[in-house]
Length: 348
Image (cartoon, rainbow, N blue to C red; front, side, top):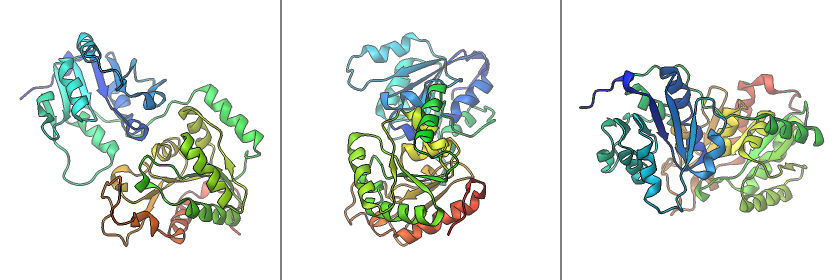
């Protein structure tokens, strides 16, 4: 059994690949690593879509972007040349496990899923009970006996992004108005609540709270869906222009509330402090819900296959298709009650 010696740690690499939400939920690890290793060099390895989540993070010395399109062996061997003392793999898929192993680090930490134990000499054991991904990530530090001082994810937002958001709110007459962001996006089709239902809900919120509705989108397909959502609504929502992730964070920070599918933007909204209602079905909100006391989630509790994690549903995606607008609106009212300070106008 490998005995961890803190005094040997001078260079650290944290690996977290893929989706922006997953990477965002791993950021508490960085602040706590810096607290425990004040003089160590801390690097973070992720993929291109998540670059902005880490850029500007004050607890990271170097950001390494892994391009899956690059098939050369050199990209792996470069990690070995960096002479890391500690590598923490928070993704633990075959690729990240191989990276961890090739690094040659004295201490290699990870969850030994499906035969990946070869890569790690400090093997983590997942909890038996369901727990949030933030805790899943921090458990890697707890296993090393490190002190946890802060569990909150962090998104660095620069002055340029703040100025962009301020200008947008001024130009669209949103300053000091109750503004509700709708996020109908989602990387999996099974995680998406219908556009027609989002439209109906948006109209109800706009009318009952005298609220401005802001529609959030990411890629071109989602932009087309945003325009459809706008056409379905009787009130006049505003479609957000194209933004960077930091600009999106600055925009969402200025919103009063957010209603969102399980997605990266949902996590961004929660992290910047906007009370967020997550809509869930195939994923488990106890593990992937918006993190923090301000937020809530809702799902169709009448469905017995919730949390299936399927990207394609054989029974018509009932967890979403049968989730009623009334159910989501009722959850939104609970979110409002939980965060009364965000209300600037009373419901009609």
